[in-house]
Image (cartoon, rainbow over all chains, first blue to last red; front, side, top):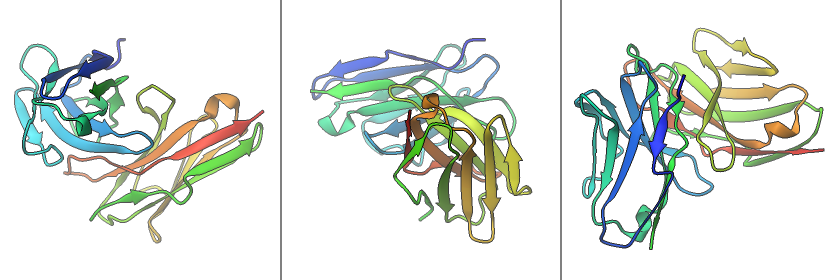
Length: 115
Length: 112
């Protein structure tokens, strides 16, 4: 049973470039969540998606950030024109169909460094 | 706004002792609470959860206590081992909501 997979594990970008973070949920899971974590801090909710739908993006910055979870393939968190403040660990979690409050299982994260 | 916070940012215990990590939450509508363990360089790992219709739940070496009156949650780890060293997060959500709100975390050090 593969867990939640994220790639790349580490991503280095220069200011102004684009960052694409990918997340494959656990098999059978249809809910995907993205979180951001700064060093020595907790996880901040960004967005909650189901297949082809964004359910809640209230934690997502209004500009430069977007997320999708297509019918086929992984969920993508896209950050355009990255700035140094975007440097953080980005975690994806998934949960099975049903209640959105069911336990979320986390991937290993993508550590983004913006130079 | 809504928040989940922790009383102690760091906790140091002797191997073999019991550990208690505390958490306060402010949203009275929250009805589902989870404890996660995060080791360095890894994603959070589910430890145990509890719904608001319970006040205690036990797992293997871990117990979660929920006091809704004072909006307090605690994680007890029995016979703490070096492998328990990590950051522990409490988190809350509520039925019909979509967000899971995480606290800032408590770092647990286990001394051999």
